[in-house]
Amino acid sequence: MATKLPTVAIIGRANAGKSSLFNRLVKSQQAVVAREAGTTRDNVIGKVTYRNEGSEAQFWLVDTAGLKNPEDEFEASIQDQIDEAADAADVILVVVDTTQHPGDEERTVAKKALKSKKPVILVTNKADLKGSLPDDEFKRFGISTIIRTSAEHNQGISELLDSIAGLVPPAREREADDVLRVALIGRPNVGKSNLFNRLAGKQQAIVANVAGTTRDVNRVQINYHQRTIELLDTAGIRRQGKQEVGIEKFSVLRTLQAIEESDICLLLMDVNELNTQLDQRLAGIISEAGKGLVIVVSKWDSVEGKDAYTRDTLAPKISYNFKFTPWAPLIFTSSVTGQNVTKLFDLVTDIDKRRKQVTKTRVLNDLLQKAIDRHPPAGLKNTHPKLRYMVQTDTSPPWFVIHGSNLKFVHWSYKRYLERLVREAYDYSGTPIKFSFRDEKQIKENRQRIADGKDPINKSKKEA
Image 1 (cartoon, one colour):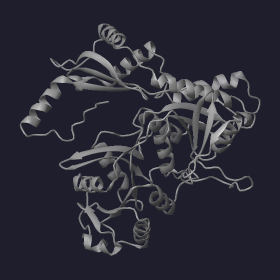
Image 2: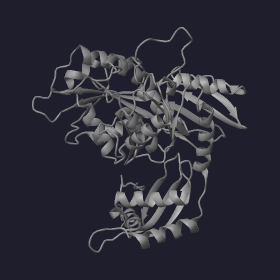
Image 3: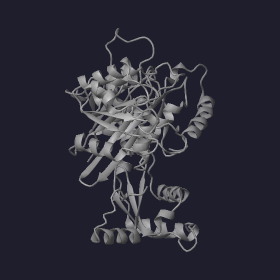
Image 4: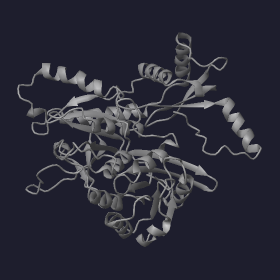
């Protein structure tokens, strides 16, 4: 059953400390999204899980300015960020620099945020610096909740998280059904809408157009081999003759929501503009969200003089740039000629089956024992990790829990080693698999602390 998390958006003018605040809120929870090797350092989306006395919340945190890149034509203006955040977020954080007197830009941001009718928190950042202005200087914005912070020195962060926890709606669970949801993800102008139309047109047995959805995510349900597949197009379909010229802006919140709602994502890349950092970032987000992934090279018809050699030359380069998702299949398509379009249906239904397969505990533990015999996990002096047994606890994505002691010393490379062995035993191509480590000694100590009245708040129960 899929869980839909609320979204908190950070908006504000440049140099107000939005990125520092984002990093502080996310990294303090040790749950950075898209942190795998190969993705860029400037994360723009993070999942925050916060627990404190009487306060608990889990939400997506989005820095709406985080995708800004002077070299990209689709750089979103501050106005676009505000509009998007107001439209799609559940809570808005307006961040201002307390060392600067508020100007027209800050007032515009605050006014638009309030006009959205969404809960708004004014974060007066850099409050630790000499010459920072008192909060009274910012009360004229009309935002009732003002929290003074220093993202750099972790001041006011707990108070801010408490306030967010009191405002975000609870995570909503989608009722279980047998619909396979496939999202088309990618940068503007990579051919998402064309592929969406081609996929929808390929099948004559259209079940229904799903009504009541947001204007930026278009959907259609298709019956393929007695299976209902719902396609989600994050770009939107414009009527013929109404197609805009130029580069569309990248809608990060809509894309995030589509990823979250889907089971499998088709990550589209234009064959004429491959391997951008943003594509890698999106792949990292999809993987961290636990969704199936297919890397789709679009507009294959536009390559002149293409042949098998061209494809064989491109494929290793693409695989190298996406080596942090080596399990994702790669396919070359053309919405114009229809090349490999129908194969996408077979791919996603196969991946869906693999995501739902259940392993045998006996096989897993034989595999774990052989892995330890062949390559024991390293540790520190007298504190070597002991891996006792492994069980599968969930599907879609497949999730494995390893029980033992001193598990905090298990190196990330050893986790990759275990994942590789599991993938060799079971075919999990097209889907990430997740591992958690339950340290029996740590659990026992935590229970004792609870009994002693020392609740280990914010201790993560699942260490990736």
